Image 1 (tube, rainbow, N blue to C red):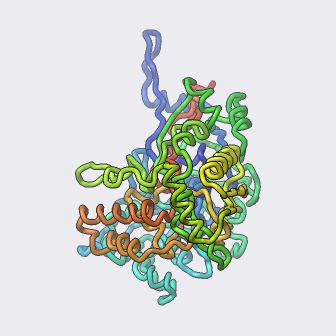
Image 2 (image 1 turned 180 degrees about the vertical axis):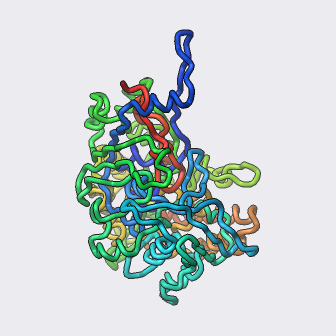
Image 3 (image 1 turned 120 degrees about the horizontal axis):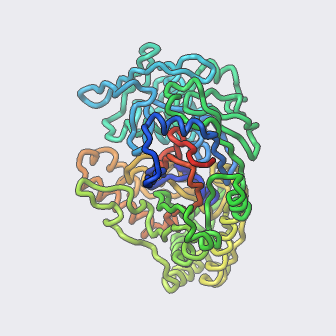
Length: 569
């Protein structure tokens, strides 16, 4: 997820706890039967769940930047949108994209270009029906330049007919290949066959929006919980647009409301790890992340859960800031920084949450070829920690710039974990690169997103969670003008390799795989366009009475549609 998922992030160091963009699955409650236990029927178990207070209390580590699905670019927004809205498809408990607002599978033309969806009977939270026009309007609005969507052009270009030309300003957004045939029939025309198209339909950018409501709200749309309509399992309430608390309540208008057991989810933004742990241990919160000393302290706790995510974090090296070249425009300076800090110590001592060093962009245990081989096996590790190589590149870079000293700013988050990481980077880089002074700029998440969009930084700690299960979701970020490329990186050879993987090589899996691997090596080990840091792991405490939270490898991080409370009382 961009600055998501998406990452999602994005100084998603901010959201180590709550925004799972990887290692899908669910936490299942188990029932132990002893000699004195009475066997129960499914109906009796259902009644037992209903008798419990179905309220979940959670922590977020960042504010909500926006609830407009056309504007969302972050893990917080996509996580919430996944729970309060629903598109044509939704990821289920096994992380398979299944029909949601679409009533069954679509009809697909013989050439694989035209998908015709029939919508089920579903309502918005105001009781009005969800129609095909709601999808047509929302998707076209995301492609309208006046909307200012980043994800609309990013997700639709090369996929939906005319989206690429619209992005380039050659065609009006109204010509996007999506059309409401009638209230229940939606026709989508693609630019070319897309094997993973239906999984895209579960992603937040493709959610519907009711035209009449959006228009009536004007500039106020999605600025607070009352200025949004919901068609998913829950509705957002008590959010004023800037606050540090909000809640989700069960949406009685949801077409599958009988599946939803939770009546309420209460959120509070808490950025300090110590405070989060205290809230958990005193029973005010049902789930919290652990890092650093707290991860070590609770390593043997029976309520500890661990997962390796598919989110990867890295340094973004901005080569041009406010119209001026930065020192990061020099490839040797970028190489030096990429190799000058010990990633193993970072994950073992600073993070201590199950994360692993990332000497790559595409995560391990994420994407596999037709022979079930991990994409990671092609390139292995690149740009690894090596002080000698880092210093050699550093001296060469300084000589090329005609300087003996450099001052570089690192943009990071304002949580405890982010600050500890930034201090670690500062210490490592200043120690291993003579003449370097690192200044730290630690800001709230939404401020960092603005600085990223405006390309107003030098080095930024950022991350990405995948949007669909294919290496392309990582590789297309760094195309010239790509969705996450607010750093002036550009290499025509890289563009050629990545674009070929999504075009002429689309039906040649082996050649496509190799092209993306070659592009990754070029980005990481030749151009040093970004500096990989770690693949995120997650360690958190979760109350044993919380059952059925589903974590997704892409898109919205969590689903609470199937979550329930059992055994708390």
